[in-house]
Amino acid sequence: MSVVAAQQALIRRVLTMPGRPGIVLPNHRGPYPPPPRYVVQVSAAAQVRLGISPYTDATAEIVVRVETADAAFAGDSDALVQALVDRFPLGARFDGVTVVDRPLPRPPFHADGLYVAPVIVRGRTFF
Image 1: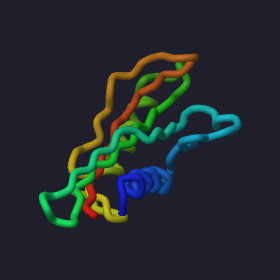
Image 2 (image 1 turned 60 degrees about the vertical axis):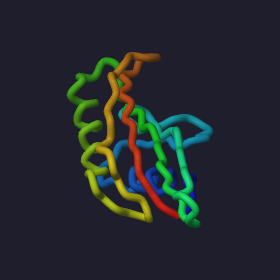
Image 3 (image 1 turned 120 degrees about the vertical axis):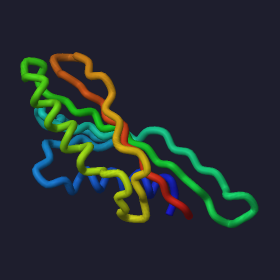
């Protein structure tokens, strides 16, 4: 396991969501799927060695931008944000990652005809 592998595990968890909207992955080339969609960005990561032990405590983070058409009601975005938050319940374990903080929705904003609501997702792993 590594921090990068933990970030990839978080992304896989989004990819396997039942009924999820279109998705854009990091380094995506070509046209984006139309909104609504999730735009995944690899974000911060931190790791620290546990004393003199050979083990590392690591925190991986991704940001998922929930994008809906600007003309859509905020409720459309809210439902997608809630589905994403529900996908990462506190204490969930998958692919060597543990969810230690509930996903954190950030204030939405308008950009380029879109209503955008960022959601920060964090997981913790040891290796």
